[in-house]
Each structure stands twice: as C-alpha cells, then as structure tokens.
Length: 325
Ligand SMILES: C[S@@+](CC[C@H](N)C(=O)[O-])C[C@H]1O[C@@H](n2cnc3c(N)ncnc32)[C@H](O)[C@@H]1O
Image (cartoon, rainbow, N blue to C red; front, side):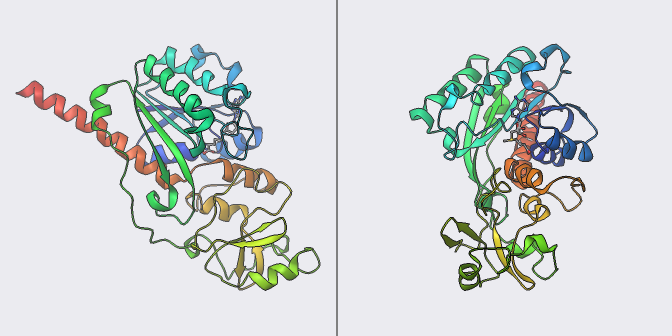
C-alpha cells in the first residue's frame, strides 16, 4: 500500500510503517533541518514546504495517510488553545487533503492530552471531521513502555480511521507486551563521549547537587530548576522537543565515565530507531534533540502498522471466502 507522510519530521512513523511492509512514496515537512535528516534516510519524494502551500493535486495518489500533526497546541506544556492556536488549525490542512484524496486509511498520532482538551471538544471536532468524510475510527492511548518493549514513559494517542468498514471491524490495537529491554540496551554506560556531554564542577552551577543525587546507573535523572529528579521506575522520561534548548532537560545518567546527559544518538536509540538510522554529522545538537523529541517510538508504530496490515488481509480473506461459498 502506498503511503503519504504529512508533518513527517525525521520519519519515525514512516520507518514503523515501512518495517510493517508499507511503501512511503511521498512526504511533506517544512523544517529544513528535520528534512535533511529525513532525506539521509529515505529515497521517496519529500516536499520541504509549509503544508498550506501544498496543492492537493500535486500529491500523488496514496492509500494511507500518516500524520503526527503538530501537538504543541494540545500538549500540557503548550498553551492549551486547541483550534484557536495556529498550530491546532493544521489538522484542517489534513482534512483538506483526505477529503479530496480519500485514502483507505488515515493514521494520526498526537499527545495524550488531545482527548481531554477543551472538555473533549477539540477531539470531537477531529472525530466528526473523519466520520463526516466517511471514515470509521478507532483510537487508543498507548504507553511506549507497555506496547513497544522500550524503557521510555511516553503516552500518545493513536487514531486509525478506515474507509472500509470491514477492515475497521477486523482491526484491533496491539496487546501490551512485557518490558524486557533496559536502558543499557540503548545507552553505552562505559564508552567515553565528547566532553560537552559531561557535567563537571567547572561547567555546571549545580554540580554538587548532581554528585550527591546521581548515583544509580540503572535509571535516568532530570534537573528540575532547583532539584534533581530520579525516575525511579528505571524508565526514561518522555523525551520532548525542547530538550536541547536552554535548561537541562536532556535526561542525565550516571555512567562509568562520569555524570552526563544523553547524546542525540542515544535519544534516537531510545525512540526505537535502529542503530543504522543516519544522523547528519554537521547538524547542531539542538536540532537533533528536537527532532528526536518530536518523533515517535518506532516499535509502537510498527506494531500498530502490522495490525492494520493484518486487518486488511483478514477482511480480504473473509471477502474471498464469501465469494467462494
Ligand atoms: C510532532 S512533529 C512530527 C514528527 C514525526 N512524526 C517524526 O517521526 O519525526 C510535527 C512536525 O510537523 C512539522 N510542521 C509543523 N508545521 C508545519 C507546516 N505548517 N507544514 C509542514 N510541516 C509542519 C514540524 O516541523 C515537525 O517536524
């Protein structure tokens, strides 16, 4: 099935769908830095422009629409303005496209807070829009640590809309799976990283506090303005898009080479990108941290995409069986 990816970022959703056997043929992303990372890893057409400038007629026909549309408007950390916010309005750019192109399947990803925003009105608008265009919708909030076998606490809402009611009826979100992976599967605690990742008495005003609290190599810590927070569950906290900008919100670990923050590569690892996913060597870390935090946990996407594929196959098989009978 042919896939078009909107608000593609670095293509985390695209990777998950490709692993499940779908083929991405077209993508759109307006941030030139994210687009550079995307281009290093995909060969499909990528339109680097504001979605508002993309003419629907210029998009090739596709079967599946993917969109982790901008969530700032809905996130707890954002302004809670929903559709009044310029970024909230971007959903209607998707609506413009799906009403005309009528893909068989629409896959949307967003922050969990989308559901409760404005007493549920924002979410209702989205569901009504999909339903009035003829789609049957299923939705679920899944946490990466429960559904992706990946030690990150990241709850996101996944919305899957189907034109074909038979496929909709066959589709179920994946079941939870045991978390067997640990931080050590994604972070190398023994390798010496570049000095800029380490906290020392010379470069950090709160180093004494860090030295006092950051002692357990099996978990992550965060500097919260005036105190050190330990993530006791041995999970990494939700990586966020503002990780690399000011503050000290990149997770901190106690490694054998010192107290340090995650590198951008480690952030991509802990989003479930394979080790061979390429990161541009000449890109500032602020961009890379942002790209990782903006992305998705790939194994969760892959599991949902596989369920979509299974549902399509089951619906087709039952149709063929009925024809034979
Ligand atoms: C939440 S991120 C999605 C990231 C993506 N799912 C991934 O795996 O990297 C939203 C993306 O939408 C892009 N974006 C925001 N406004 C846009 C617009 N008007 N036109 C095109 N892209 C836009 C942002 O640059 C950002 O990369």
